[in-house]
Amino acid sequence: MLMLTALIGAACGYVWHRSQPALKPGSNMTQQFGFYDLPQQQKELYDVRLSTVGETIVSHVSSPTNPQFRLKGSFVQRNQVGEKRIFTYTPVHFVPSPETQLLASNIDLLVHSQVRMQQLWPDGVPLVTMQNGMIFFYPLDDK
Image 1: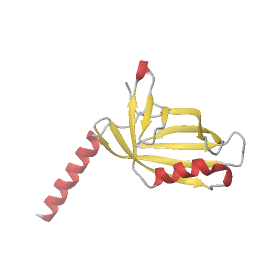
Image 2: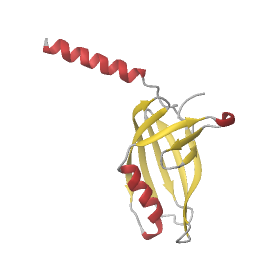
Image 3: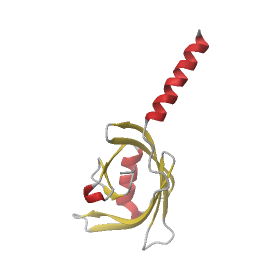
């Protein structure tokens, strides 16, 4: 009876996982983003490359002004509630410095909270919105 219960539970988990829409495979984007602190008159610009591998969005962030700076991380999809996809973020390689204070605070926010992303398609353009106000150009799914 215990084996039967375990098999039924595994089958339900498999069916639930298969019912979750997958991320658009093979998506690759390169873009630039920035953070601005108006009171401190501080700005940070970064080049970012995003690519999809299975249920994971891999990010590579570099600085156009500092060739030694690198941030690698991954957004792993954990759940989907309606149109919103829930991700966890894990930095794989990141060494904060005084020049990356604004980015470091956003990385800290991403690491310690669930990341909610929603796909929008205004005029056929794939935009992704996040709960922290970030909007970026990337196709999470096919439309």
